[in-house]
Length: 388
Image: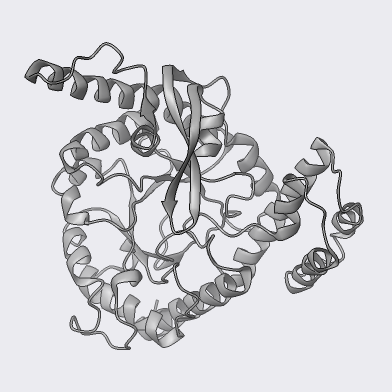
């Protein structure tokens, strides 16, 4: 999937209040119902959504099947939001998922939850422990992809949490259970146990999920690895886990990788082993950039260092141009200049994909939509300026 300055959204969007409350068995209010109708109007879905409106009038006591229907409608709304924003490749913003860790862990045999831990701000996730060799009985993103593909009129991307992040965010009560501590031999054995844990998750969990999606027709898969640089000495293990995850699917579809809010220099030179395995390498830039217009290195302070790490590689540069941790609506001119600066460094518009820094789930749909619309308009201006 190659297209100059292709646009996509990285992963998450906020979930509609009516979807959240219904699944949590909380009663819906008039405001929740009006929110559904308002967004249906904005997304040109009002005539099709009478089934949804009738179901929401129930307000509480939704059955399991009715909750599944509401999730499907939230998915349809989110896909349409991204399409109406003008993105080239769309997703539904995790409407089917709790979040990127708990959702897969619930569906992987060999893990048990141990309690909630804080991720950032006031966001928490349930942390699990591995208690036996992990495995899956069925792919856990397949139904999600099939649902989204039915609604989408544009190419679909499916993100999947990678092996390294699942391992790093979990307790190990299985692979380390007979490993001594306090000795050099114990340290060696602990490192080997960690690699075995990674290999098992990559081969027995991630690969079967990716394979099922490829066989179902998905042609753009994104592996999310926010934990990739957490332990710099384990970057080679992270790289090998990615290779094991993709396996013989290499080259069959477009594979992207998203890593955010990191010192990306820690990935080098090991990351180059993924050339040809991963096509797009998406990082965060806008969060560390200035808000001033311009295309000089002095202004585009969030871009120079990381772009220089990637410019001589074969990777498509996934360019973060929207800060997802603020309600600031980036002006079209600012986004345009960020893209123009990246083009000046990379020198190939087919090697740049444009996206937010990360998922937009902490922003309202109003803010997310405004940011994305400006992003698409900025890309169009760059294309016009460059004759693309």
